[in-house]
Image (cartoon, rainbow, N blue to C red; front, top):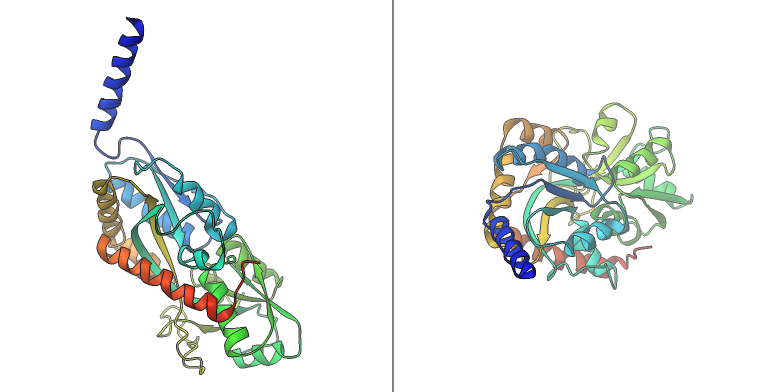
Length: 318
C-alpha cells in the first residue's frame, strides 16, 4: 500500500513538473572555451537579455575548456534533452569532426543547432616588438627563422586559417601552438610567447586599438570597420581565404521542438537589442541569427566546408 502511494505521488509530481511552462528553473550555458574568447563574450552578452525574455529565469555561464571545444560538446550531448543545458560553441564544432577520428560526440546526431548567433573574421597578429610590419615581412621572416603561431585551440577556424595561409599558400613552416580559447591565445601573443597569432577578432581588437598588438591581415571579405587600416587576405593576394569564426547555440538531440524554437526566438530577439548589437559590432561581430531551418542548413554547409579544408591542409589536432 505504502509503495503504491509513493509511486502515485512520484507520478503526480513528475506530471506536474512536465506541465510547467519552460523554463521553470535556471538554464546553464556550457561555453566550450576559456573566458575572454568569442564564445564566452557572446554568451555573457546575450544571456541577460535572453533571461529577460524567458520570464527572468537566470542563465548561468559555465566555461568548460579543452579539446578544441570537444570536452564541452561531449558533456552537453550526454545531458537530458530538456532545454536546461545549452552548448555555446564556435565554428570549431564544424571543424573537429573532420580533424579527429573520435571528437567524443556526433555533431550530426547527438546535438541540434539552435542558432548561429554571430560571426567574425580571423586576424593574423604579431606582438608590437616583432620585426614585421606587414604580412609579407612576416612570411619572409618565417623562411629564415623558426616561428610559431598561437590560436584558440586545435580544430578552431583560426587554426585552419593559419595552416592554409602558412603551409599551403605561402609554403612556410610555422608551428601551431593551441591554447584553451581566444583569451589565453591573446594573452600569449601579448607576452610574446609566441609573438605571432591567428585569433578571431573579439579578444585582440581592444589590444590592437591600444597599440599592444599589431594586426597584419584579416580573413573577411571586407575590411573591419573598427580596425579599417588592416587589409584583407584577398587584398594581399590570397584569394578565396574568407574564413570566419562563428558562435552558435546547441542542445542535446531529442529536446522538444517547441523548446528549441523558443530558444531560437529569444536569441534572435536578444541580438537585436541596440546595446547588444552595438557591443558585438564594436568587436567585429556580424549578427547572423536565423530561423531554425536556415540555421540547420548553414551548420551542415560548414561541416562540409571545413572537412574539405582539413583534407587540403592536412591539419592535425596535435
